[in-house]
Length: 342
Image 1 (cartoon, helix red, strand yellow):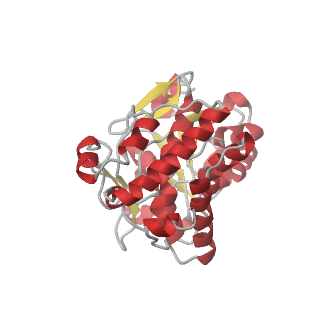
Image 2: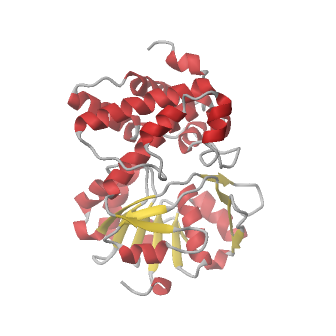
């Protein structure tokens, strides 16, 4: 691999997370191309890209600091490192594009929700050309008219990459975007999936995550859903790593605490932008397909395989699917409405 500063990096599917990472990398002098939608590319080309975080590290990237592409063939042709940030249901299509347009020495790194994306990429690319990684934080995208789009990191966390890919860590580890290695990235991804089960509940509630987690009724549902996932993964013999150092069984117990005790015990968890919602909520609002099949769907498939029940995960999946079909945004359900038929 060339030196980090000279490495040609393409972010394939530059939405909220992809643009945030691209902005941080470009600010550190990396050679970054954003493969994104035409409307976003046009706005960045006119006004640049504003990147911010919870700690007040605000940076505006001038348009000339980024290469903007809407053509996969153009964006992938010269790339040596491809950061895949598309939704999980688009991974197969993106993998085919990478196989068609990128050079044989290009490496693809999955930075996505779900646990199967690297396997999908490996079906199209040589196994040694695929690296798995995990992005823990939530990013809010705002696109004000006649101004630079803003990508704001709304929660904390350290990006984790496979330990064997130390070179990738050195490329991505730039100011205000820390990266670390991990010896069992598959366990990390399962651990994140368990926590990400709340994405569906948050999308159904329509509430900011901070407000949702401030209501014990919602937290009890989070706990029940998480406990179902733990039971299924344990029955299947699947390893899962603690999320940001917190074991998921501890998190499930904490969610059931009365509000004052929860606020005292979960200060770190509640350190977030108070307007942040899940990306699944954003997908419902935009009338897009969600990643529910790659979150709750994974738990349900495993539950069927090991003959365990996962009724709340099934209920949440079905409600999100109903909202997708309705294309009316979040249904803004109450906790009781989610639980009523279980």
